[in-house]
Length: 132
Image 1 (tube, rainbow, N blue to C red):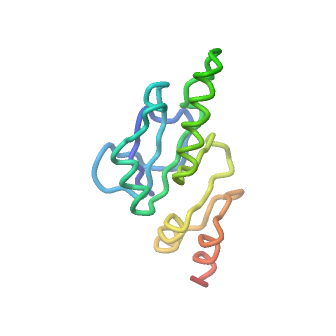
Image 2 (cartoon, one colour):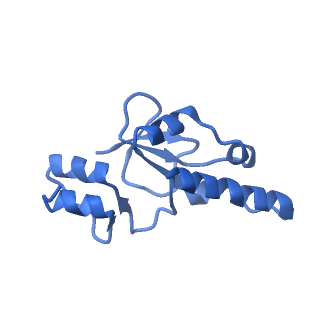
Image 3 (spheres, rainbow, N blue to C red):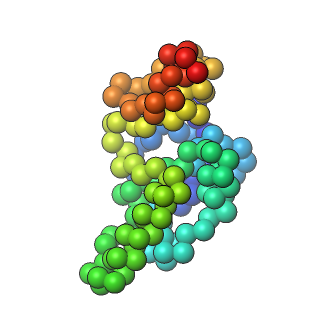
């Protein structure tokens, strides 16, 4: 199973990872963030994973509710956009899970195939087809 470093609370639905709190991991899952954490997001482990090209997923139901204060809501939207620009992948835990190249290599090594309905990145598809 793919090891995921868990930041915040464990997601309410199963994303298909074995969660670890430290040590080596294949991907990072951000299960929850408070308003303050989202506005000042600079988690060292997440930034390190992104710099190494590892996939980082943000479980969107773990995000804070949109406040009624318009300026604060705009700041939260901007913070989410910044995370997306860094390469953080947003997921709601739906049945259609994104399979990255790194995960495809792990699947191929273990003789597994993606779940039905999974969305493959172009490189992941090439890896699983043996073209890359």
